[in-house]
Amino acid sequence: MEDVENDTGSEDDNLANFTCHSLIDMEQYLHYSLVPSVIIIIVLSCLERRLRRWSIDGKLNKLYGRCGVVIPFDFVSMFHNRWSYGFAFGATADKLMFLFGQDFPQPEMPRVARVFWVMLIAIEVGLSSYPFFACLSTNYQKTGAVLGFLYTSSWLIVMLIDVVQCPHGALSILQQYESVILYWPSFLCQFFLIAQFIRIFVKSLKIFNGEAVLHEESTFLERHQILHVQQLMRKPPLQPPEKSWIQRKLYEWDPYFRFPSRMISTSVVVLICLYMFIMVEIIVYKYISALARNLANEFEGAAAAFNFSEEMRSVQEFIEVASGAWLATTASSSLTCIIYVFHILVCYRKHMKRLRVGKKQFLLADFAKVSHSLSVVAMAKYSSWQIAYTVWGYFIMHLVQWVAVMVFIYIVIIPMIHGQWQELLDKWGMVILTFFLVLLIKRLMLLMASRFFLQPKISPEDKQKPLALDNRKAYQNFTYFLFFYTVVVGLISCLMRLLRSIVLGTWLIGRIDRPVMPKGYEACDMGFKTWVGMLLMDHYHTNPSLLYFCHILVTRHREKELQKAIPVAGTELTGTDCRVSARARTRWLLLYTLLNNPSLTKLRKPKSVPQPAEFPVKCSV
Image 1: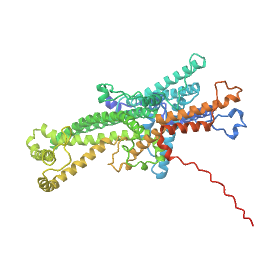
Image 2: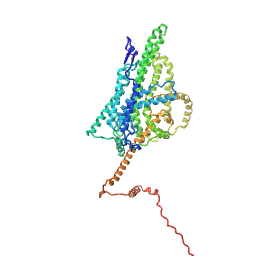
Image 3: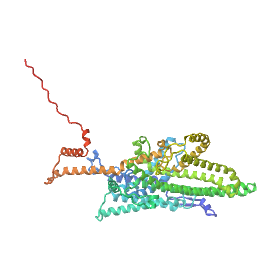
Image 4: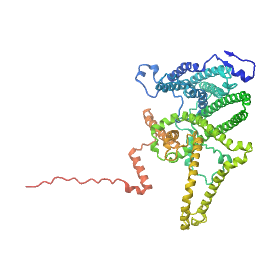
């Protein structure tokens, strides 16, 4: 229940003394939820059929073919129910944030034990979320829908009870309705899952009563993959179709490409985790900002007594400037990370298309550095790494942006506000003038190289002059004096290079699809290697041309097996049917190939001519 200890005062003071005790401890319920989770896994496993038979199947007829392995989510090749699995991952976002904020065991515990402790907590969270996915992926839809509905509803009811009893959190010292602000995305995802389980159950009942037809979706070859291969077989149009502004500038829809469920689910859970992290950051910021203002107001009277009024005004000014800069950089960093999430999807499609046409060198120069075992592991850990990289990338980007804005405000903006234009020009006027002069001289050098030190164009249609020197003596003098000048400018160039690296590294730390290391050292970036390994694994298992070829082989193999089974079933060949021997078919294909490719006759192995037998000669005596 709730114990409220408050005095008369402002609403913030009341919240500061507010302590809430809920009937349900969510951390304890996480432990207790393992029991129904294990029961659901066992039930679905008993219903699942195995492809391989065990020796015990012959002794227990009722176990024959049962007790298979339950698959919660296909990370390799799943293109159906993408949004259902996306919201299932979204329902686990609060548990993922629980992993980020989980406290370590007591310091007395050895460090080796701490590693296993964190691993144990991760396994516990994964096991408690297992039924969300297993009930969606099972082939026994009625059982899965009922179990998934009950399990998801239990989590939703428990979380609603906890939030209703403590809407401001367990210790309401930060923000009003803190729990509602943080957990409403999880509630939305759980409501969607419940509706999805109801829809699956109703659909399975209609199929059972004969009111609907079961359309089994093929997991081997999808429709968009078939359309992609058919599109490759067509001739390209003479004139490409006109594109709209959105297609040219923002995004071009491709009907022959479909994002797998893994990428959609990763994007959904990344956005939810990023939202929860930003909300926690804003709540903490409001609390610290209010605390700093209260402290400044309390010390304002004491500062006036000791003649520290000027210093106190500087402190208050710093608090206001820091608060405004923090809010501005929060908006810019949040928008940047949200754009990154959607841009990663665009890069995934672009990279997959390049891999399908055989272009691989744009990722890593040496693909031997990405082993097959690394690709297998990369497929499994990409989604979790994308969440961690995005969240930590936002925090680091936000912190660096805030520091940069604060430096700029105190160097440029504050002196302008206080009317210190003369001091500002004395300090930074020479630096700015020197910077512009260096840029001007750089442009002049490029202009001189283009006008005087390169020969004229060979053809008027050429875009630039040929790389052939002209006025060599003048060029040698130009290079000599430029040597002494660039020694001085090289220091500024080195500092600018370092600054650019810091800025780009900070902005790209959340981008796992782009290496942060320079060219040649991409293998040192484990995040980018995970991206490359995931792409290679995805390319080798979802290439439409390869899957279509395998589909043709499987189809023809089944047709041959069916033709072999026809005589066994007692059917007789009709008059139009004829049997062609494999040897005759091979000879016909060989003749057809040699007629179309006469040059291959020279490469054929010559037929060995039998040598005449040598008989021993009898000598007459």
